[in-house]
Length: 441
Image 1 (cartoon, one colour):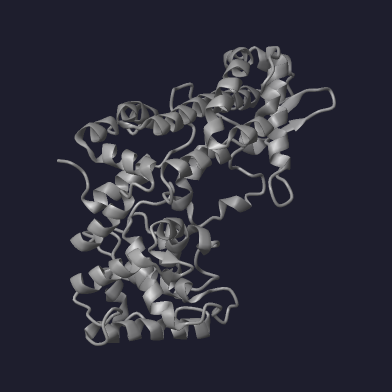
Image 2 (cartoon, helix red, strand yellow):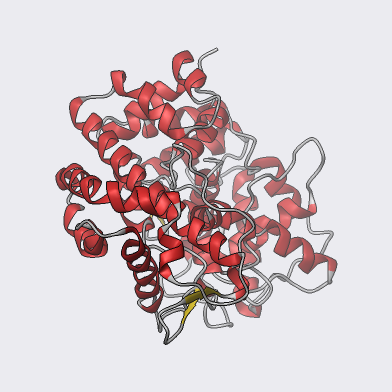
């Protein structure tokens, strides 16, 4: 299941901007957008790429350090704002000072910076992540920071100020931001100077012996939450203004919820969550369940088609594809499921998008025609990908036959399990709970 696998692993593949893949590897059936919308409703601000909420503290510190710069300030490279230079410094500092007892798991940009240091060139826009506003830690956690009011438009929000105050006190850095004097004041000035000079040069200007590197390891390591910071973020995540996230997290951190999540099966977890959910949340879980059943059937049928076509070195007709069991099952069951899914999505304003995207699957079709409809749907999805479309994964021939392209040959077909195709934030929420000390013993 290539689309969801790459989406889940994208933060680990930060040396690539997968969105620029020539052929458009991601989401070949346009299933992701609705799933993502439902995931946003379930856990506002939380994204699958997130794992360590202490980056919120780092963002608050960055906002404090960069507060003296004008909003439109950019580096001499013409693209990098002050917070980006701070991020370069922090990632380099963590990479330089990493040790076996404090591994850097889930640090965006770690590998890029490691190679840059090995090559003895400075960290810059050219040597850092290709799309740092998406894949750097500011990009990964910005939505959550805004949702929790840690940082808004790169300025401290209410929670950000409280978080920074707690951090400053726990780290023994009075004067860093919330008071007028103390040892923290000189530390902030040291960081401001490093950012200012980085802006002027368009790259990190500090040398290996700079004392500031150890600051990031000692005071901002993603695994080193203080009790005060953790408590503030945990309370914010459990805010009942976002009840679905709150209900999910409370169940997930209970003994029953932890047991339900042992197998990392999100469908099973949601089934165990239902008795603890309010009626409106149950409706959202129903929508996810029905949509994922639909997605799994389409994805498995598509993967089976690719696998079948991969067995041949010449074009095949749709009659052969129509003989596949998954195609027969889809041609029989998808039209009935289509209306169920549309109705389940209606309370969440997604039925219109569903019907627009998948309208061709609403009516019964013979298996061979259904297979052709599925592959035509894929071709249309690829053609409509911005900015100028992407090539489909198959070639069509004038005789009505089709052949899988070399880059998409498969050694196996669909999963044919009850697993969700997409992810719905349970994994990052569980990682948050572990870091924040929220799990019931």
